[in-house]
Image (cartoon, rainbow, N blue to C red; front, side):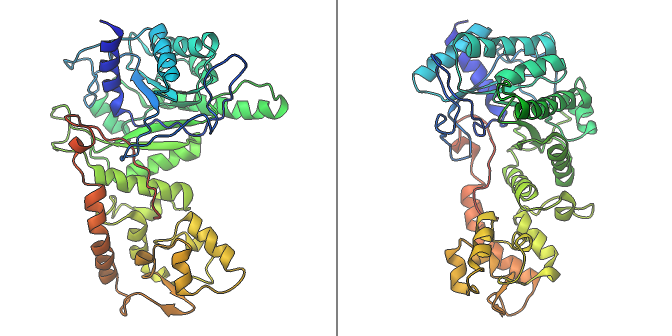
Length: 431
C-alpha cells in the first residue's frame, strides 16, 4: 500500500474526532528550524461547521485491538486497515507544511498491539519532527488511555496540545458499548497531563529554560446521543473535568449512525441541535458563571431543543426579572439573555459616565430582540405588556425558528457529500 492510499484511509478515519483546535500555543521558531506556532504563525481557516481546516488531521493507524460498538474502527468491523510509520507521518507533515497546505498536525490513533506500543510510535513521530526536522509548528497529540504515565509526560514535551477522549459519559455506557475500556485508564493520562502542566508552571517560575509542556493545555471529547445519558449527566461530567483537570475545552460530538447494533440507538441522523445546545450550556459554564445544577435538574434533565439554555434558564427563573440595566451587577448582566461577556463589560464602562437609554443598548452589542423581555431601562419595560413566560417564549421562538432551521438543521451531505460527519460548533453569537 502506497503513502497516498494510507493517507486517504487514515484521514477519512480521523474525521470523527472533533477535539482538535490550533489555538493557545506560543512555541517560537528556533535557529535553522521551520514552522512557528505563535499566534502569527498559525493561520486559522474555519469551515461553516466550525472545523479548523489548517491542520493535517490523521490517524496513525485504524487497526484497533478494541471492539467499541459505536466506533467505525472497531476490531470486528470490516473496513480497510492501514498504518503509517513514524517516518511517513513526519515526512507528510513537513511536505504539506512546505507547500503551505497546513499550519500544523493533529495526530490521533487507534490502539495497535497495546496502549504503550501505540504511544511509543506516536512519540517517535513527533521526535522526528521536533529533533530531526526542527519543526516548531503546532502539534496536537492524542494521549492513549492506558499508556504509562512516563510516556504521557514524554509526549507532553513535544506536543503543543494533548487530548484524551472520554467518549462516553458514564460507567454504565462504557460497560455497554466499550467494555474493554476502563474509566480509570482514561482519567489517569488526563491527570498525568494536568500534573505535568502544573509542574512546568512551577519550574518555569524558577528556571526560564524549563522545556515547554503542552503549552496549549489539554482537551477531551464526549459523544452525544450514543447512549441514553441525559444532558444533565453530560454537563455535570464536563463541569467536573474542568474543575479537576483544568481542561481547555470539552468537545461534543453528535453520534453518527454509521454502524448497526442492538445496543446503539435507532436514529437516521446525528442529533446536531442537541449537540449545539450542550455547547451553548458549556459556554455558560466557562464564561458566564453558571453551574450545571442551575441549568438542569432531575425534574428537567434535558435541554429544550427549541430554546437556547440561557433563555430557558431565564424563563424558569422569571421572578429574577426584569433587571434594571443601569443598576445590576456585572454578574447579573451576564444572566440576561441577549447580553454577552463583551456587551456586559461595555455596559459597565458606559455606566460610569451616564445612565443608559434604550437606544444606547443596541450600540453596545446587546441583542434586544431577546433582552427586551428581561430588562428595564431607566425604569421602563420595553417587552410585552403582560410579563407572561409562555408569551415571551413564543415571541423568542418565532424570531429564532428561521435562524435555527437555516443554520443548524442542515443536511450532513451538504457539509461532506456521502459522508456522515459532524464536528464541533462553538457558538460565536451572544447567548
